[in-house]
Image (cartoon, rainbow, N blue to C red; front, side, top):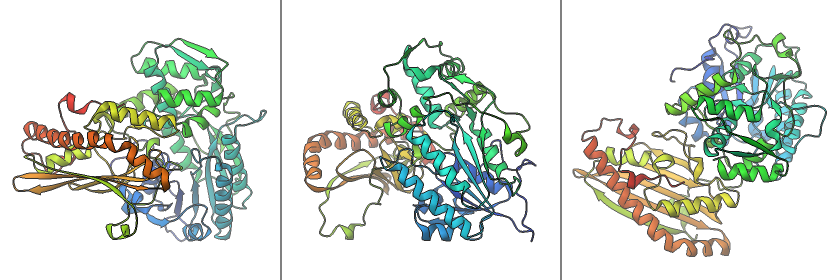
Length: 535
């Protein structure tokens, strides 16, 4: 594993306490592929815990730097068999899952998962459950998403297993959805017509302080079974948060006009249009800002000591997050979270196509660049580098997807140069990667069927061969009509894409004539005309 930033888990107040027999305690993490779970796991390992994870796709676990250091159980939190296997012998269970973008039935899904985990944890005599819930007021009607978070906490608290519910508000860190919303709203709009909630008071917390409390929660006294609020040292209006970001980013402060006509539904559409945050995630974020959400008391201080350096102020957290973004050093990101309502099954193997209708578009080109130079371009595709074909057509397709509630092209990618299984690349998801050879992407745009894009590099003589294959498995008549409608555009997009990728590889060849073995890790330097960002 790479070096960890604070907290590392090796702080005296966070190090694992051995079992009575001297062995290391076992921690189970639900949500290990998520924004916080992906950061918590390596710190648990560093603190001396053995770690087990439950994941729907264990391939995503293996893609993390720490993937080989944990036990993996394949399954879903609503599956009693998988959860029963996962909780066996566990000392502390971290519940970091929720259905924030999970469609209309998210409340029943959250309820079912919480009850399944609560029952299994009690049956397995788990010593502690730690749940990250949402900071919320107690004297008003809550939004559906906040109400669901509260209900999950109540189910876990009533499980019979000592449970600590950490209730956090806006989490600020590189790659967090809340930070990205603040960042893009402020970057894009010089003047902000904003919903009235910009004047509500909230208490943001730095991601490193959330991790500190999560690690410390494993060591609280065994009789503790309660919710506690956690938050940073600053209480701010949301408008102050945006202008605090502006100052740290070197921007002028933004005039903000509060508009009472922007309902949560309209505001989520507005956020969806001007930021990379899709509507399914923007809606619960917006709803969580409808009321003042501040820490009611500091009871958590009696249970978990504060970080030695103190809680991080908001602007310090923004400054640190910006540095991570600029250094292309984002540990985990909201955009790599799974998207509800899109196909998630892997591409069927070729023999499995027998008897099924599949449309394909295949392109092959030879290049004088070697396979490593070609791979450096393939691995850097998407995000700021674009898709090496008509930026206008890609942008139109991205906007069409956003208008129907999809993620669109603005989602980008976590790292500018490196991809792993499970990473998001605009409206694609990395399904498989063979470094230096194959990148397979699964579509997460809204389409009536399943779609994949494969990009391959293979050595051929002194140069290389580029293979590009798009596949679409239509669903019903709508899928067939969709393919026919976009077929003329595919001729323009995919042919130009193959030409420009190979041209970009030859540009890399001229700039880096003998790339090292890690050539796949260099960002391709290509002419601007070839790599204009698509959205």
